[in-house]
Every structure is written in structure tokens, then in C-alpha cells.
Image 1 (tube, rainbow, N blue to C red):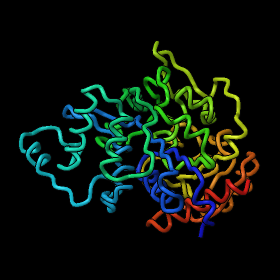
Image 2 (image 1 turned 45 degrees about the horizontal axis):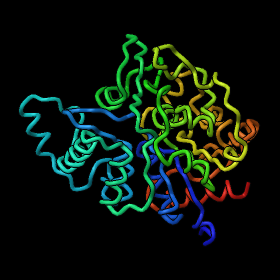
Image 3 (image 1 turned 120 degrees about the horizontal axis):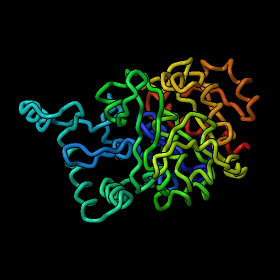
Image 4 (image 1 turned 45 degrees about the vertical axis):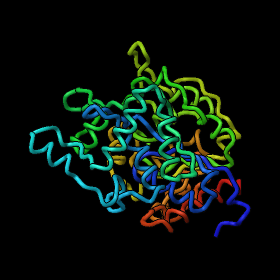
Length: 348
């Protein structure tokens, strides 16, 4: 059980994907929800059928609202699919499945954006509607797109085409975040980082969920981007650059309150292509490999019990390593992991 005084801490989490949403749910069951901020990846955002879709923001929102389809970890429970069935009959594009109620939310967001609202304002409106006290913030209101280069053809494709249409089964040679150089953090993001007592980097896919957040220039001034020497972004002139090559001073106070959780257990990702992407980007697909890219960002790294043998290797990188159960199979296990992460930072 977490001590009562710790429930009043301010906790900020960097998150994306289903694992990230589970992490946020665990945190808000350990900390007063209004004192929790989720900074959410928007590199996955896409426009389809004329609708602005923000998958990671929606997954966190649906999860905290108690509406998520727990079997899939995303989308809405008790969803209907009339629109998709009709579109399929019309021979329309249906590889990206959208439920009827989900479509309504995308229509609402698209309409607000078309009238001049920012993504932050739309997200805040939705949180109010669903009664969510947690602060859910997009990483930026500027357009940032995760783009992947296929290893076999050299073709560049967007995230959703890679992840959904191609079922993330094709090898990748390069990842970049188009628009990152011109982007700034969304309102509230920098303050949430500097004022937090604890910062948690969720066990999300590093390349697809966390790196886009850490690569935004004004965020990287607070939290150094990962130690990673592949080209992962392009500036407005389409010249390649590597955030790791920029001179970022390590902020000891922020690093000291930051903990990262490995998305890799026994060399495998529980869900998604994180293990394969690590290997394709030239990084050892292990918990230690992930620790090596977060070593300048976080002071604590959490690994699963199955990877206990890697503890000494990780601590030799200058991080404290905590070994515990990291599989979030229900709300209680998510909460327990959140408590372990918070306690580890507070002890430092």
C-alpha cells in the first residue's frame, strides 16, 4: 500500500499505446487523479475519411473514462460497426477499423479543429465531458508524423499504414518524426515536467511512443532525448538530423525524479513490434538495450522479474535498477507497478 502522503504527489507520465494507457490507469489508482498528468504521443495521429484521428489520446481517454474495450486494450466497449459494414459493402477503405461511437468522437474533434480549436482544447473538452480529472495533454498542438522507411524497398510510409495496414510485420531501416524541428510542446507540458515530483516513462514502444515526445525541441531541453544514433527526424529543410547529436545538458534534478519502465521482457515485447524495431535500429532487443537509450533521461530503470540477471549490467550504466513484476494484466497489477515506480524515485 502506498503511504497516504505519497498520494498527494504530482506525477507526470510520458505515454502512448495500450501499455501506456494501462500505466496511466495504474497511476490514477495510486495518486489523486487531479494530480496526475499524461503527456501523450501524437505522432500516430492521422486523417482518414476526412476525420482527424488521435489513437493514443483516445486510448488514454477511453481507459480513464472506464469505456475502453478491455479485451483489445483500445477502442470502445460495446461498440457497433454499422458504418464499417456499410463501407465494406461499398468497397471502401476499411483496413483501419472505426466503430460507430468512435467515429462520433472523431467527428466532434474534427469539427472543433475546423473551427480553430487546438488539439489541447479538444482534449480538455472531452475530458470534461467524460468526467476525467486527470490532465491529458497532447505532446504538441503542431503536426508531427512518425514516418518509417521500409528496409526492402526504401519506401516511406506513415505510422498507421505500417502498424495497422501492414500489421507491423515488415522490416524497417529508418524512423523519422516529420515536423519535429518546428514543433513546440503543447500548453501545460513543460510545466507538468518541471513541477512534477515524479516523472514516469511508461513501458510504451520507445520509437513509436516515447521518442516523438522527447524529440520535441523544448521538451528535450528538460528531458534529454534518448541516446540513439540513428537518424530519427528531419528539419523543415528535409535535412537529416539526430537529436542525440545535439548538445543537451543533463538536468540532474529532472533526471533524478524520472523513472523508465522496460517494455521488453525476456527479449520480447508483450504486444507490438518494439523488440523487432530495437533490433532493426541496431539496439540489443533486451531490457538492458532499452536501458542504454534512457540512461541520460532517467535515474531509475524498472525491469521485470524475468530479467533479474540484467540488473548489474543496467546499474553499470549509472541507473538504479529495480526488479519487479511489470506485466499489467489488470488494474491492481497496474497500480502496483505505479506504486513501485513512485517509491523508487522518492527513495532517491
